Amino acid sequence: MIPAESGDLLATLENAFDFAQRQVRRLIEKYPDYFPIYTVGGKWHHSGERWTNWCEGFLPGMMWIFFEETGDSFWREQAEHYSRLVEPRKDDRTVHDLGFLFYHGTYRRWYDATVREGLADPTIREVVFHAGRTLAKRFKEKGAYLRSFVADESLFIDIMMNVPVILYTAIETNDDVLMDIASRHCATSRRYLVRGDGSTAHEALFDTQTGECLRQTTHQGYRGDSCWSRGLAWALYGFATCGRLLNFRPWLETSQSCAQYLLEKLAGDPVPPWDFDAPEESRAQKDSSAGAIAAAGLFELSDAVVLVGTDQARQRRYLRDSALRILAALCEPEYLATQDADWEGILKHGVYHIHKGLGVDESVMWGEFFFVDALQRAIRHLRSAR
Ligand code: GLY
Image (tube, rainbow, N blue to C red; front, side, top):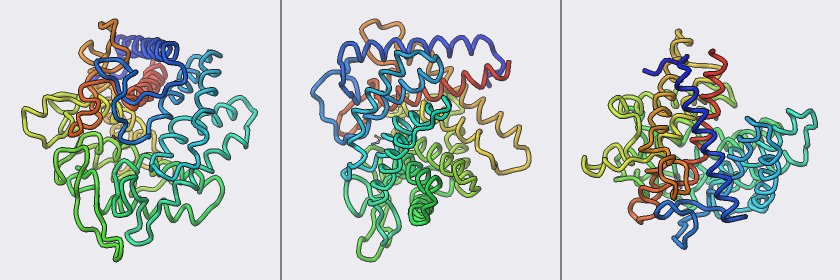
C-alpha cells in the first residue's frame, strides 16, 4: 500500500505532471491544430485508421488541467483555441462521445474556469447544454438506452462516461426529460452490462422492436463474456460521476462494485492487462490507459458524498491509496516515456483496438488525458494531506 503522506511519491507525481506538460507542448508545436488518437511507434502523426472520432476533447482537456494547476496564460490561450476547434461537434449525431468532448474535455472546464474567475459566462455553458441535448437524441425508448455509434441495437459501457453531459444539463436547466433519459440509461447499463461480481461487458445487443436484451458481446475486448479492462474502468468512473452529480447511492454502489472487482484483479500488478479474461500469454499486453482511467475514477468515487458502508473515512482512504498505487506504477520508466527521447507520448503501453491492430502497445490520447486527470487529483490530495 502507498503511504498517502509520502513526500517522495508527491515529487514523483509532480515530475510526471511537468513531463506531461512538456510532451503536450511538444505535440502542439510539432503538429499544430492536429487531434491525434494513438501513436504509431511513439509518433502521433500517421495515417492509421481512427475507427471513430471520439478523442478531440482530450488534448484541450489536458490544457485546461494544466491551466487549473499552473495558472499559466499559455495553457489558457491554447485551451481556449483548441476548445473552439471542437465546438462544432456539439451537433455531432454520429458518435456517443459528447461527454468526453464537452464534459470531461472542453467547455465544462472552460465554464468552471470563468466561474472561478468570478466572471461566469453563460454562453460557454450553453455549448455544454447544447451537447447534452444532442447526445440525448440517441435514446432508444425500446430498451431504454443511448445507442452506441455502431447501431441502433447496440449499447456500450463506454457511454457511461458520456451520460454526465446529459445529467449536468438536466440538473442545471431543470430538465426532467433529460434527467429521465440519463437515469434510465444508467439503470439499463447497470442491468445488462455490469455483472454480479462487478465485472463488465463491453456491449449489449437489443431487439429494437421489443427492447429485449439479447446478449453481451464486444468489439475491443477478448470475448462477449470477458472483462475488457478499459470498459471496467469506464464503468467505475462513469457510475461514480453520475452518482456524485445526483448524490444517488445506487450508482455509487455500482461504481464500488466495479472498483472492488478491479482492485482484486490488480492485487499482484497494479497495471491492468488489456482484458482480464484473455489467455495468459495475451494478458502480458497491458493497457496503461485502463490503469489511468481507473486511478482517476477511484479518486472520483472517493470524492462522492454518499459512500456505502459505515466506515467512510477508511473506505475513502482505501480508494485513494489504491489509486496512488496504480499511479506510482504508471510513473515507472516502463510506462512513463521519460527515458525515450524519441517517444512523443506521455504513457507507453496503451491499447486502442487489439483486433483491428490499431494503437496496440502505444500512447493513446485518452490514456494521456486520464493520467493527467488522475495526477491532478493525486497531487491535490497529497498536498492537502501534508
Ligand atoms: N471507444 C472507446 C474506447 O476505445 O475505449
